[in-house]
Picture 1 (tube, rainbow, N blue to C red):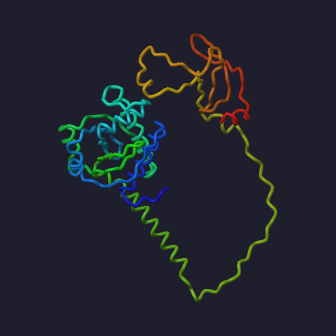
Picture 2 (picture 1 turned 180 degrees about the horizontal axis):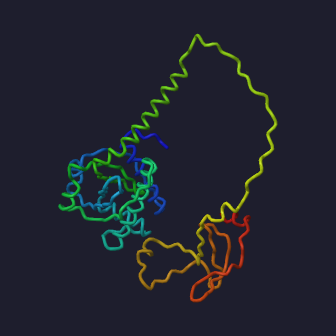
Picture 3 (picture 1 turned 90 degrees about the vertical axis):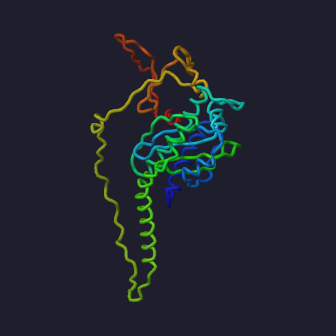
Length: 305
């Protein structure tokens, strides 16, 4: 893991993880180039007169978190998420859902990055989107919050993304920074100690014990009885398909999703997510079951992986 020297390093590292996730999701080049600390008052001045949306969430046990982005840039993200060729120009239920999903993925990736830093699992709240009005300004431009400004690249669009978090959250990261800095100092100290020359030391030639032939391996345990009570998850997969975000958001009760399997084809039987067999669906006393018709050989499983 990269050495983190400041709070800005922590947030920048987490934000880079989030935009990498978003970039992979939409298939567009999205990146963060730098981070600058900003007071919430200064952020309020910088966005004065601009039409923005606010995405709010909570990284539990760390901080409440708000993102501010201009309307046109939020709509660009919605366009990417929905796979549209032409830029979306207005907010509606579908475009707002697409923006919410984008930031949900981003904040989840941030939480994962932060969990690796602080050493425990972190949950998030589902993001909510609001227009930046006087009520929202009064909620986030307060003394207990601090801000950061990122330079965000959305494909060929350069823009700013603002992040506001609780100031007290910094205390939760300082112990991490302190321990890393202490570790670095210890390494430097030990390195210097090795370099100190002791003129009174007598250098002796290194001697090695004679090599002896390795001992015969002890009897292997190799007893599958040890694993018989380990639970595993068996699932049956009828089929798969890929759809665009815009098609996903358009689904409703009664919608039909076409899968990649033909009628009558065997279903896949997976153990802990690994394909191990194929079979056919049967009904047993009003319950569904599956009859195994083929066991996948280890060689074939390796080929499919």
